[in-house]
Amino acid sequence: MEEEVPPTRILIAVNPSSIKGYPHASISSRTAFEWAVEKVVRSNTRGFVLLFLHVQVPDEDGFDDMDSIYASPDDFKRMSEREKTRGLHLLEFFVERCNQIGLPCEAWVKKGDPKEVICSEVKRVQPDLLVVGCRGLGPFQRVFVGTVSEFCVKHADCPVVTIKRKAGEAPQDPVED
Image (tube, rainbow, N blue to C red; front, side, top):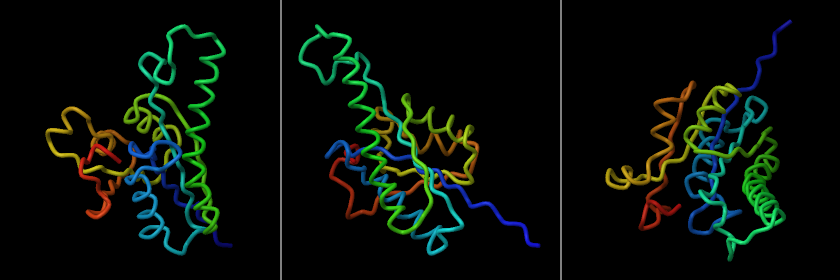
């Protein structure tokens, strides 16, 4: 009797577009997803499970969406619920795409510094491969913006593939995505 091989688990870190905002996926996230499906999974949907992680960056002061610093506990509760809902809408895009092609998937939201949370989640879920989008920042922009993909390549406990955007998809300012 032949032993069943477990599916290959691919973790894809996704984020919203900085141009369109929630619930639109960034160019880099969509490109990473499309690459994983087209180049790795191909037609073998039973041999893979895609794992989608969205890391929400907490606001420094918690007041970005408010007109006043005079906030009630209900205001904070609504802000927290709205952020969670936004993250779920972002993940819904990828989950629906997987369901359309019959590809098993899981998706979840975490809060924190994306590069730290992604590497922590890699340790926790132990995927076979991590796929992250890359915005293609120049050396000057990398100093100020930082790159999650470079950090993950150096620190993640699994193989990491970084996917660059196609030239025709890149906005004039690579920081925008």
